[in-house]
Image 1 (cartoon, rainbow over the protein chains, first blue to last red):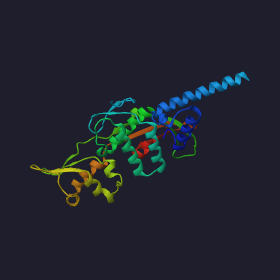
Image 2: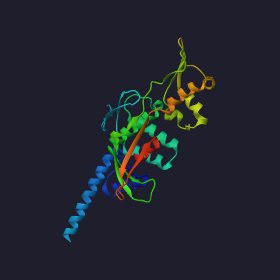
Image 3: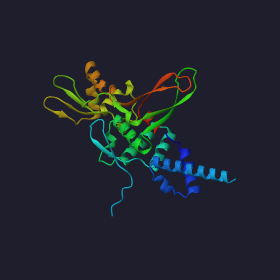
Image 4: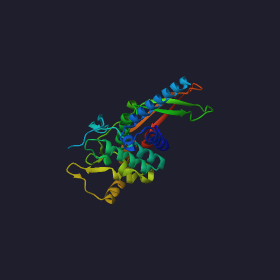
Length: 56
Length: 231
């Protein structure tokens, strides 16, 4: 499997509680779509972290 | 107002009949059901999860319960390729030897094909009498092991009809059928058995080279459980 059940719950929880997604939205996505959003979000957070590091 | 279609549709060809099948990718909520079945690990749970998924994702009218096992495996992989990725990544390690390294191997789903000749199931037993068989399906044969003890059950579950020069016989009890099969001679029984032992299957040979020791190795993926693990 390209992911495990526990990973799926952890990822859904993080997306719902930290990034304003709803469970209905997440569960209505095609798995590759969700992977794309997670990857874009990860990229965005890395950029934010880099900017914050540069400011210091 | 009719519901709006929000997922793309794709087409593939059913290996056993060559018929075009339209399907949609599965969704995250459906993937969750597959993951729960995988956690459970029971053969019957996995089969049920896969058949339910096919019922949900195939848009055309099709009797999923009567699909041949290789059709189910093929459709499942086709739906997987449009839902997750057209490539499967897996970590492989040598089956034997000292090297413990794991190598990332990519498999193209489009290259996974049904192997073996697909027969129409008609077998001539004598000049006058023949039998029409169908390939086993997961819904009927899910609990049947492919061993000698269960051969009669496997065969009797998959007889469509028996025919001679004048008639087609498709109304019989299971007991009558088992008795009829029991009266086949060795050659006739072998012919019937060959239909099942040489049934097509979804099978893929993966050849890979270890990133650590450089040795070439191979792995075979076959059967619903193997393909299910890849999803």
